[in-house]
Amino acid sequence: MKHFGWPLVAVSSVLLSLTYGATRPQYGGTAHILLRSAPNSLDPGSPQSTLMASANLVHLLYDTLVSIDDTGQVQPGLAVSWQVAQDQRHWEFQLRDGVKFDDGSTVSADAAAASLRRLNPWKILSHGSSLDIDLDRPDASLLAELALAKNAIVKAGSEVPRGTGPFRAAEWVSQKRLLLKANEEYWGGRPFLDAVEIEFGKSYREQEVALALGRADVIEIATEDARRLEGGGGRIAESAPLELLALVFSHAPQADSESKLRDALALCIDRATIRNVLLGGKGELAGGILPNWMSGYEFLFPSQLNVTQAQEERGEVNQAPLWTLGYNPMDGISQVVAERIALNAREVGLRVQLATAANADILLARIHLPSANAAIALNSAAAQLGLGEPKLYTANADALYEAEAALLATKRVVPLFHLPSEYSVGAALRGWKMGRDGSWSLADVWLNHGESATDRPGSAIEETRDSSAPVLPRSGGHAERN
Image (cartoon, rainbow, N blue to C red):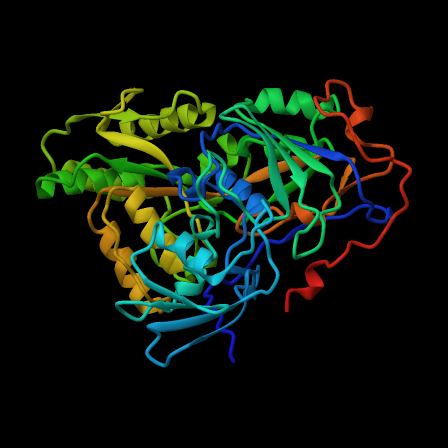
């Protein structure tokens, strides 16, 4: 039986493993994480699961049939093996034996099929411990699709669906707080941590203060602050550039003159200066929707400043309309980037006025790419941009390029930057790993001896494990994921 990986065109990857000192892994303790987002659901079927922070929460509670590692290879999850027919339309998965939901019920093929049917149009059949998926057309990206958070296997029927992940939800206050407890029966081996406490709706400033006071172990950091924190000796974890910052027009151009003005705007934006001055040197200049590490061809789409050509394009149109440029007022960096774009536009004779209204002519948008699979990422980005999904079913580079070029040819989106997600990690937390897709691996994280939650001021959780407990090898472990 053959395991099938998906073709990866990326030329580089980011895998940051932060392990310090000779401290051996040990059980116990509560890790504290602060996030800006404030999810109102933990259901993988929620639209929020496409966001990176929410996807990470999903993977703490739930498992998918397969996962994708940082080399692009497919790894077993709840499915231990799989095979596909030659036409790539019929797939069969063999499920792992003995896995239980956190309520003690067994994960059967019937249960897995019912979970996947919630959001997918596939024909899904179960028999014994096997699961069959039949597709209307060949889809080389199916395994990467199954690895998405939305396709986690759950037992629905409650506010927080039952899962099989390394942690279980012990307390959930929508948009405010989530307390996770270690799943003692996790098939991959019990996590080292006893618990994880996650607080939502915290600003960057609140998070930074909490970390400095020892009240948080992991916080998000703004892209523009990463250089400062690195310079101060902070431990920074960074994903690959997976967030697209782009200008999105509310409608397609109505005439050739409008297309010329949009071209002039794209050409006059000084991306390099914005990146170096406003973004702290972080991220990559974007000419395409997909980053080059993912597609391998983004360099074919221009992203360089060309004031002369912008002025020529502007000069071919008698009068330029006044465009309103909308941005998220809660995102400080979006405002200063929007201001610089408006300034660049005025220098070539374009009129751009900032606005916070949702009905602005142009929106400065942040688009999260939910997968390192290029086809899935492009489909998702197009949908989020309001361009209509190209519905790619192949990772063929030529097909991807043609689809992306067609999306850019609509003149509705001007890519600006691809930005990483960045976190600052406290000194007490060891073993923190972050995939290039921004994923966490908290099952293998531990707290340094003497740095448990009860040692920190302001902790909301009382430890239940003796901090003097002996260090033990983690039972099961990921080694059994064959």
